[in-house]
Length: 243
Image (cartoon, rainbow, N blue to C red; front, side):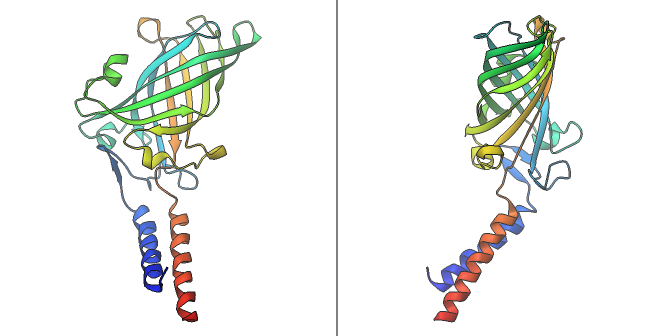
């Protein structure tokens, strides 16, 4: 690498670190500010949450299928008009019950495997709290995720239709328009995002209803980019001295 090229790369990396701290991100019409006070600058720059519906299960091998919509993105309150102007961000998911370990009656701990989540951006908003409206044409696949291992959690009245509980999982990115933003390996064991969810009775047609939070990094850490830039500048300077 020649001196001029090293200087150019170093300056570009430093410039990128500055722009990464100041620019909104827009992927497929979904917009968020990685510097928002509602994200987590010390660890992650992306926070989102929303609502979900899912069926309940009773025994290992049963499948949970669900769907929902994002209502908040780097915000304390619903801000769909800001993060998805003229569009909506919805999702579908599925997973299989592996085990339920009772602690008392129908209360206990559970494990689900093969959690897969597909997130869609739709510029003709028509979500009506149904699976079809959460993924229907002309929606585009915005992000696809799979669990790294199990989704685990605990519940009361499990398998009764009056289930109440919480679950969590580490996720890996597998595709979608925003895959390049979130495939950062920035979470525990090199995973990409963290999911936490809750569920309770009261959904339509006997479904459970609930909420979720999905967090992660959506850009490389600015400090890392800046260090790369400084390193390249130092390398170029040392080459210049030797020359």
